[in-house]
Length: 365
Ligand SMILES: Cc1cc2nc3c(=O)[nH]c(=O)nc-3n(C[C@H](O)[C@H](O)[C@H](O)COP(=O)(O)O)c2cc1C
Image (cartoon, rainbow, N blue to C red; front, side):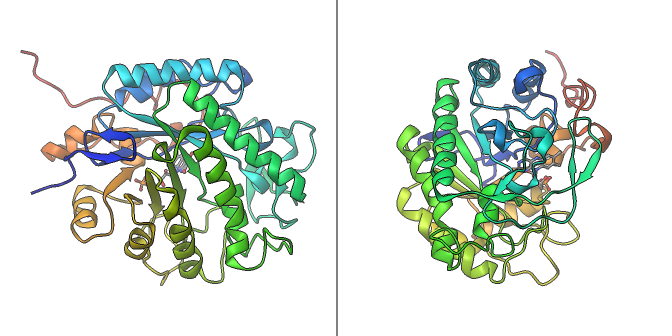
């Protein structure tokens, strides 16, 4: 019997099923990085998910690195998100805000002072950033945050969590995956610091734990999740021993009693899979964390059920198929065919490829 459609409670958040909407940047925010009004429709259409995780949402201007991504630190941004949260709740859904600071993969165009982006260390990522006009430019060398500045960034996370609570969100997800600021601290390919935030694994994990502690103090551990991508190479990430690092991360998060740990672990040739031969860590991480584990990456219904059945996960999240199928849970339940995603409309644009994916035809009574 499928467990995918059974309820589960993540900390203080009761879910009606175990299929979450994975966080997906859509780059459609308006002036002042206020989430666009159409987002209320987009997310409400997907309220059949057990949990909706919003697109990554910057905690400060310094944290932005892509065009038209929403923030969650000004009054206008909070008001914008409140409309989204209300629309999802009106449909019986649950929604958490994914909190984001991109660190070194920002560019001066997004920085409040037009200067270098910040990072644990002055190590540039290989690859290209997207400018505000959606064209590409090579990543720049970031400047290392001073110890005092790190405390300020931790406070920015806490502030954004408080604002998420004000907007009515059910909780927040700390984005510690995919090569953004927290991940840059975690992995030794991007963290070459010699202070208490660099070197040994215990030190590289410190920033994540401080952010978690500060957010937990604001909104309670039972409304906080953390997302990690242990073997992912997004944004030029690398670590000499991802198994040791991320098992330590999961164990270090355990005492907080968080709502969930969200792990991206895809199989090649999925674009978010690690290099060939990467360790499969979900099971060990679930054990070390000791709380609900949400697995993501290339999952269809059968793979999702297998992950629940063989002890790798308690629930799953789904990205691209959910983007293109607002009623994905109903379609999975009935083995209905799926809409084809339109990659050209993933980032930026209007309702096309956003709120116009068709629902299954339902017979009206
Ligand atoms: C258009 C798009 C935007 C994404 N934006 C984010 C994001 O804002 N935050 C994040 O953690 N992951 C982001 N991801 C990664 C997804 O959450 C997910 O990990 C990935 O799509 C793999 O899951 P899937 O195979 O079910 O699509 C994005 C993926 C896509 C396709």
